[in-house]
Amino acid sequence: MVCFEIAKPNNFRGCPASVTTTYLEGYAVMSYPPSTKVCIKCQIEKPVLEFHKKKGAKDNLRNICKACSSAHNKANREKSAGYFKQYRIEHREQKAATDKAYKNKNKERLSEYGRKRYQENKEIISKKAKIYRQNNKEKIAEQNRIYRENNKEKIAKQKADYRKEHRKESIKRSKDYYEANKDACLETSRSYRKNNKEELKQYFKEYTEKNKEKIGKRQREYSKANKEKIRERTRKWVKNNPEKTRASTRKANHVRRARLKHATIEDFNPSEVFKRDGYVCQLCGCKTSLRYKSQYHPKRTELDHIIPISLGGEHSLRNTQCACHRCNIEKNNTGTGDQLRLFG
Image (cartoon, rainbow, N blue to C red; front, side, top):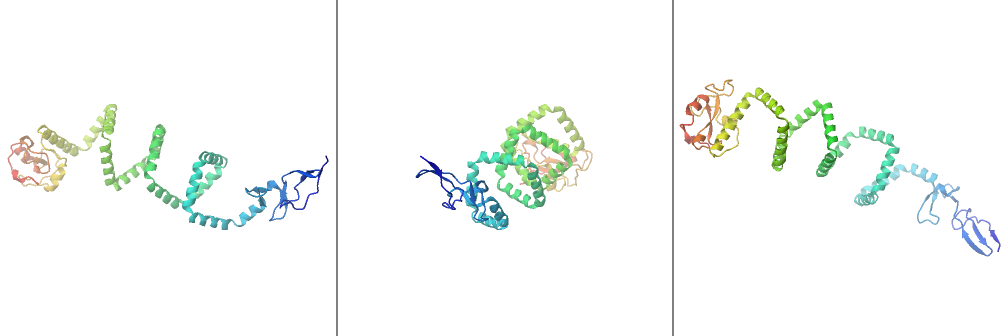
C-alpha cells in the first residue's frame, strides 16, 4: 500500500492553507491540527500561539490575533469602561450575587492568587495605594464611617476575637502607642468624655449591672496585689480633697447608722439638700457656708435629720434639712425641732 501527501488547498473549511491531510491510497487516515491561522483583522498568517483560545469555535481559537485584540482594547478603553460601568449599575444585585458565589467557590485559589500577586508587585501596589489614599482622604473616611455604622456588631466581634487570640501582642502594642503619644491620647479621652457624658454614664451603668461578679473579682484581685499602691493613692487624694473627704465620711456614717437601726436608706448627695434649702439653717434661719476652714465653725453647713436616725428616722431627702453646726450640736438626737417640716 502506498502512502502519499496531497497538495494543500487554499482554504479548507475556513482553516488556512497550512492544514495537511495524509492519505493512504484511496483512504484519508487523519487530519493534523493547524499550526498557523490567518487573522481576519490584519489578514496575516500567524502561529496559533498568537491567538487567544475560544471555547465553541471550530478550531477553539479566536479569529483575531492577540496584537489586533490588544490594539482594539486600547483604542476603545474609555468606551468599554463606560459600557461595563453602566452594566454594573443596571445589574448590581445580579453581579453581586454572581461574584459572591464565585468567591465562595474559589476561596482558596483566589486567596493564593492574591498573595502571590501582592508578593510579586509589592512596591507598585503599595505606591498606588498610598497615592490613592492621599488623593481621596474624604471619600475613604466617609466610606469607612458608613461601613462602621452598618457593621457595628461584626466589627466588635472581629476585634474581640483578635484580642482574644493575640492578647499579649495587643496589650504591648497599645502600651507602646500610649507611651509614644501620651498627650494626644489624654486629650482625645478628655474630649470624648466631655462630649459623651450621658452615653458613657448609661453604658457603664448597664455594663456594671451585667458584670457584677466579674468586676468584683477583678477589684479584689487588684486590691490584693496592689495594697501599698492603693494606700498611697488614697492618702494623696485625702490630702488634696479635704472637703470631699469629710462629706464622704459623713455620708458613710449616716448610712452606717441607718443600717444599724434598719431604717430606710435613700442614695442622695447632701449638696442636693443644701441647695434645696438655699444654705439657710432651718432651725435658726442663719446663712451657712461650706467655705469655713474649721469644721467646728458655728455657721458651717451640716446635714440634719429632722427625726433622728436613733429615734427611728429615715436617711432620705424627705427627712433631712440644712442646719448650722451650732444648732446641729444643740439639737443632737433629742428629736426637738419642727418635725412637721418633713419634705414630701
